[in-house]
Image (cartoon, rainbow, N blue to C red):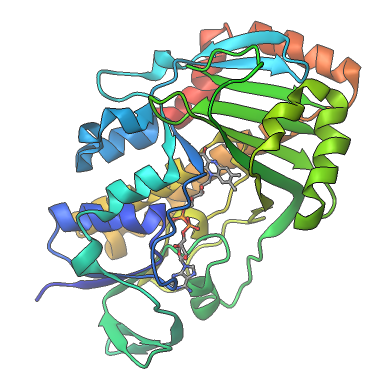
Length: 377
Ligand SMILES: Cc1cc2nc3c(=O)[nH]c(=O)nc-3n(C[C@H](O)[C@H](O)[C@H](O)COP(=O)(O)OP(=O)(O)OC[C@H]3O[C@@H](n4cnc5c(N)ncnc54)[C@H](O)[C@@H]3O)c2cc1C
C-alpha cells in the first residue's frame, strides 16, 4: 500500500515538497493550509540564489515565462548617500540555466501551485488534535475532518503550530528589534544605481536592498531598520528619523505604498522528538533576511526530505536533522554577521568595513568560502 504524508502549510517549503512528490514518487500526500487561499501578495520580491534554482529546475522552473523573472549579475554596495563602495560578481556562481534569480514571491507561488492546486491542497484546515494510532499519526482538524498518515511534514512557517502540537520543548521566535519595509518602484527614479543589478545601501542602523523583479524594469525595495519596537502606525516617522535624516534625497522613493513587518528569527535549532514528524523551511529554523536565504533554505530542506523519502531512508537513517542543521547553522552565522556589519552606526567603523569589503570581495577564496558554500549544493 502507498504510504501517506500530510504537509502542514502551503508556503514555499510545503509547495516545493508537494511538487517533487507529485512528479516523482509513490507517496500519497495532501497539503493542509489554514488560510482560505494562497497568499499571492504582489508587492513581495524574493531572491533565489543558484542553490535553489538548481533544485527548482528539476520541477521545470527553467521553463517559467522569462518576462516574469530577472537574472541580476552583481550586487553593488553603496553607502547611504548612494556613493558606490564596491561590487560582487554573482555570475561566477551561474552555470548554464542555473542563474541567480529575482522575482515576485507571487510568481514563485503561482509556479509552485499550478500542478497541485486542485487535487493536493485543502484550504481552511487547522489542526485541533493529534494522536498516534497503530504506528501512524491521526490528525484531527477543527472542521471535524481527519487524516491518518505515515508522516507529518511541518511546513507552517516560523510560528509553527505543528511544533507546538508535537514538541514539549518550546522554540519561540525572538523579535530581532528590527523591522522590514517593502515597496515596489516603477523606476530607479533619481538613484544612481544600475537597475539590472542588486543595489545594497548601508547606513546607520539600517540598510536598503533594491533589485529588479521582472523584465518590465520594476524594482523591489526592502529596507531593514533596527528599532526596539514595531509599531505599524509609526512607520512614516521612523523612516523620517532614520532613513531620510541620513539621506533626504531618498524621500521620493518612500512616497509609494509601504508594507512593513517585524523581524523574527528562531534562537535555536531543535530536532523533532517523533520519528514520524519532520520540519522544513521556517518551521525548521527561522532566519534573518540578511543573506536572502530563507526561501532558498525552505527549498533545500523540502528537497532533502523528498530524496530521503524516495530512497526510503527518511525514517531509517535519521540523518535529516543532522545534515539540515549543519547547513542551517552556516546560513544563520552568515545572516547574523551581515545583519551586524550592514548597520554600523559609527562613521569610523563604516569606513573600516568599506575598506575590508572592497578588499575581500575581490578575493576568490573569501567569496567561495562565504557564499560558495551556501550557493553550491
Ligand atoms: C523582509 C524579508 C525578506 C525576505 N527576503 C527573502 C529573499 O530575498 N530570499 C529568500 O530566499 N528569502 C527571503 N525571505 C525569507 C522567506 O520569505 C521565508 O524564509 C520563506 O518564505 C519561508 O517559507 P515557508 O514555506 O517555510 O514558510 P511560510 O512562507 O511562512 O509559509 C507557511 C505556510 O503555512 C501556513 N500555516 C501556518 N500555520 C498553519 C497551520 N497551523 N496549519 C496549516 N497551515 C498553516 C501559512 O498560512 C503559510 O501559508 C525574506 C523574509 C523577510 C521577512
